[in-house]
Image 1 (cartoon, helix red, strand yellow):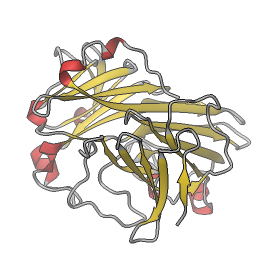
Image 2 (cartoon, one colour):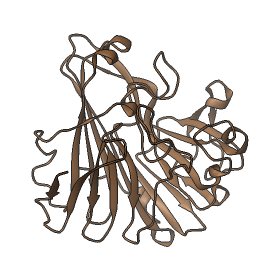
Image 3 (cartoon, one colour):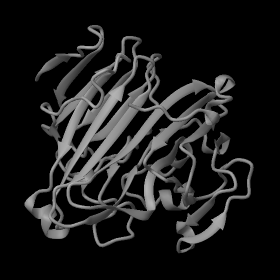
Length: 317
């Protein structure tokens, strides 16, 4: 397949390879050794590794790597429906479609000098998609890896229809953790959340931080744009920055539900946590010609150095 060099930094390369199903994957590398792999099946980030080669995203050992189903792990793109609160298949159809390289689209920022390796993908509805969701759209996705190893995803969805349409959205982010009982989330304290285990009943978070002792499936609404996931055993913190996405969905299936998920190991709930930047409580509506942008940036820092990150604004290009 092709081999490309990032024009911003000649040491930063991206490479297109083909998986065993014949689907293209794009490999992004930073000068310091960080790595990300993006599949054109679903526009899904499959892997994100730091400069020490440590995998930061969870993938189930029982994941099924075969279209049209999405792989269990990484960062599936949920559009035009998040979850099962609609008429479409769970999490919508975007994660199950083959995307195309968007080689003709101009960069988001011509003055970007942050030595990013990036790939631009595009999804347009097929005839079958229009039968189940009759709305014309163009979905452009840029996945970038900075020189510091931060991973960013920028989604732009444009209404090319003659009438308005509404959708929900989520970056369904599977984080790899050492032990779920040793993990906590900071930044969601005192927020209201919808509990999917109680018919979406609304509660208010009471804890100083979110910790895990049983199954969790919650939509934290009107959330801040920066939150942190602290892994005590690995002494590292994921800092999650988002824009255009008001909600954070937190999910861990725990022991009982794990045993009923076909493509998920019985004990794997201990090594994963989904923390999703999303628009889940209220749908986004686009008039004809309008475009919506939703951004996510993930960074990994030593836990001893994470103080102050929650006070910093999200800066995502």
